[in-house]
Image 1: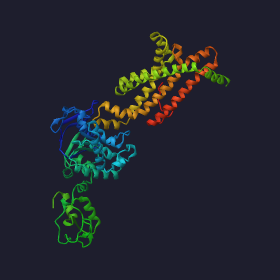
Image 2: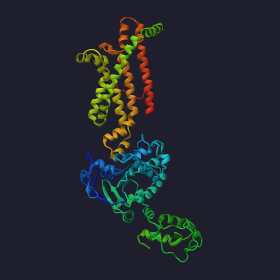
Image 3: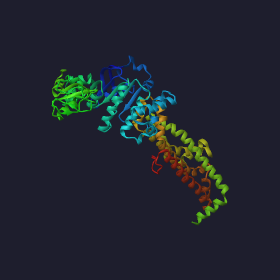
Image 4: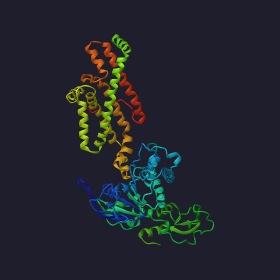
Length: 333
Length: 221
């Protein structure tokens, strides 16, 4: 758990980066700091591993003020990924990942095993990537190695400063998806900085929206979309707020109970097999974990007003554009 | 042309004398260069850390190159007298600048992101220097050392003016005696030494990851 208590950071040249910022990052969650450039989000993150120290206020880790930690020890127990990645070009991928475990004095067997484990986690087969040098890798691969390096000594806290910012949209999207999966397996507390509200909504359990030097709203993605606190937040989210909301809403939250007209369990072998919709035609069904946005796009494309939702071969509900519209207005069906 | 042939003949006939002066020359180069390394590398590392030291160190290096070596030799005379050690002082002053310039430049040119990532992962300044900055700067530093060595091989010819050893003894002695064969016999080994050192060092430099080219050093003389 990381707690910011009335934290102000003023640089030596007089610039105030953040002023009176207070919020708490819960254990094991991903909190995204998002805002336009120059809003102080990166500075806020750098306070956590003491690359910067606050001029006023206190940052706590699990209740202990950070000033009581040795900054070198603190950094060795905090993962850190930056946009430029900063892989060491003169070392192999394996040596890069081994950096912090070596600093922490692990023995070589342990380090070797850890390198292989992380490369596999990042979908980079150790036998082909371990001995490569960073300049030989693609942008996406470099970023994976960067994340692996940050996770190497299994830190309690992981700081990520626009980690996918320099990648092309397709690579970014797929790395985000992979990272979400990896994150589900870790119980690491993650602080994630980005300037993209879409990335924030996708990655965050909690989002802190920054305007110049202050946190304007700190809440779950759903709550921020439902009730933007002020005009700044509303503008920052953009005019397609309803669509963004659908993107963070799952089908199971909007669906209606199964109806008579829609085919029930019988005959549906797997979730991808076509089932009958209420128009009588066969369509490929939705899954409860699909986003409401993809349900909507399927509804728009199909001739049917209502699509079945299938889980493990059973029809568990149906979705119509009516359901989606109702959920967007804020009511649950 | 005939002077050159006579020089070669002199070289062969007086090989003992030439070898003696060549050895003296080599001693000057090796000692002066080692002393220059011992000073320039730590000084450059301090210079990268502190801007004020950087001004002093770069200034010192520039002065060492700008003042004619003969003048340094002359200035060293009242302090150290004649002979080997005053010669070393003059050569040392001449040798430090290329090493300093390249070491400072090499370390400063290491990507800021790598240094930031290293700091963020909990490396101390010393660990960053040792395992990130110096290895990445090595080819550039080595290029400076190569320039410095070649410079010192040439400049060591002047050492004889304050009683130092080296091939200069043959060359200057030959000029005074109008013995061109002796002048040429003294010049050839020095030239070969300089060329040989440059070629072999640039090969090592390429191995270290530099381009081993001729213009890869910045000597702000």
